Image (cartoon, helix red, strand yellow):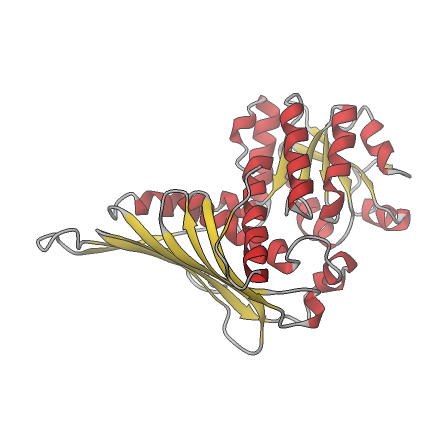
Length: 347
């Protein structure tokens, strides 16, 4: 099987630290070429891999190259639609970094473009959708009777050393909610991967740090399409505190609890019982070993899908990732209306 030639567009921190190492060791992909708006940065990036044969002068040249099989686009998300338009014109498979777009209008346009051109593969890179815990939690909640509520909590201290803070598109975000969508779509990919889509939102947001550019913490009440109610708490902009990440799901015959805080031994605690007075109470611990916390798994799945032409393997379609952004959009809109109940927009 010949490997898939990848053109890497945007050669910044994440391309260097995450994408390139995964592509280098992949059985499916070869880093073939690259492009950056500042060509010198692309040339420096190209030196990191002997297989990178080309550095382009323009973005259009990337898509015009007949030897490129896949464009891996790591762009400020307000440019995702423009990149997809070039992919459509030149019939190139493309993967785009999350969130899907800067706002709902752009996201709708991107979804429609992908729908209109099924001959190319359009993937949004959202690796939390491939967490092992998504499958394990789904299996666990099937055992706790009717699910009624949930608590999703992810908070932590502000990291002044975060290299990504210095990128101008994050300091002056065009994407709705700034860090709330940049990082929040990870959390919402995980939450909805387990419980399904969100129907309505009532939320409040605040800005803690000037460096965030806009509001950076969110406290929300969510209702799923299936009728469960729960809370979503997100923000890493606080002062000295322990980073705390957990997901609890409650049913009439038990509960499921997953602690995914950094440094914790990732596991799921499944507690059964309570459906009736005579139901036996049980407790089981399900370990999550070698969780897919990096982008390795999503590129493995993408490689499998492209090599077999079985695009159904890809979980992070434009429609799916539209929903993640639309929840953030609903959170922001609700907060602007002092916590009013708002519906999550559909594509």
